[in-house]
Length: 356
Image 1 (spheres, rainbow, N blue to C red):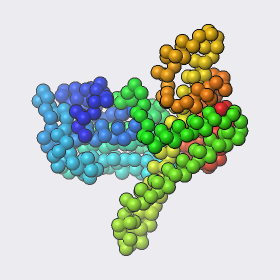
Image 2 (image 1 turned 120 degrees about the vertical axis):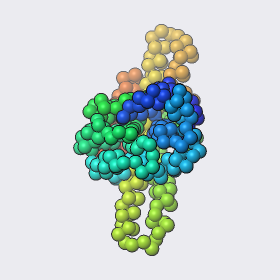
Image 3 (image 1 turned 45 degrees about the horizontal axis):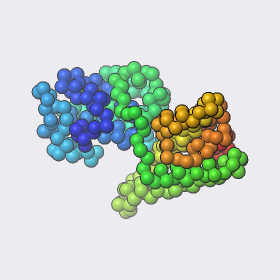
Image 4 (image 1 turned 180 degrees about the horizontal axis):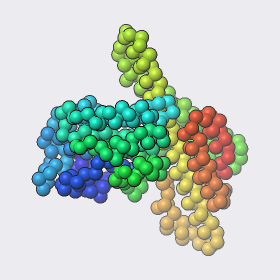
């Protein structure tokens, strides 16, 4: 991808290109948005532009990549020696101090073949305090001709000491990106189940069952996908030390990716609970005013998932206060799952506390 292919975030990209023209790029950026994959593409494109063999020139400076040269292709495929990617890889999906120290050593080495060394930290909100502290000196005084890019969908969780050393660019847009068809279908079934059954403990157990089935399916798919790409499948006759190392790496990668996708799924449920709150406030307003005008004219424009019929059904059963409590419960549940709490127990406690 080149910058010209990313029309969804014109203001932030225009700011980057203006900095490129003036030769005044920051040494460290925080890219915040709603989708890590999109943020990774933008970080990758900046790395391409800085090192492209045939860049697009404006005012005598490169402002975009050609997206075709050998350098661009290497960066695209993740095998350029001067562009480094760091991701949460432990089973608890955190970025460790050892990972940060390794990255700092790499960034201080002279470039192998590029004009700029680029380091991208994906899900920077997963930096542990110790890792963040180990990164501060590099972040504050990186070597010349190096750019550090931190990516996050949860900027509020990043330490202030990290935030203060980065130039923040928002790629959030006005609305979250549309759901893939498979997730939209699942959410529709989930919300229909919530709307069909009366407000009861049994109804919440049914919702818990729908959620657990989805998580089980998700983990199975992740396991199959990452196992198929593991060196274990290609080099089955390798030495035992390599096999042990690859097995540990595969287990950690599966757990990290599962936690990421689980967080995304619960975020969708969180948005749906927010839609219920919007409806409940609107219905309360209608009851007080005796008019349906507010409902007809404005409410659906405020919803993340206006097409779901179960949302209004549930909102009619609960008060705005209950709807707010549900949002707080979901926030607490997601915080629990960021620790080493037992997943099944946390989900059961969280969903059974919901007022639906």
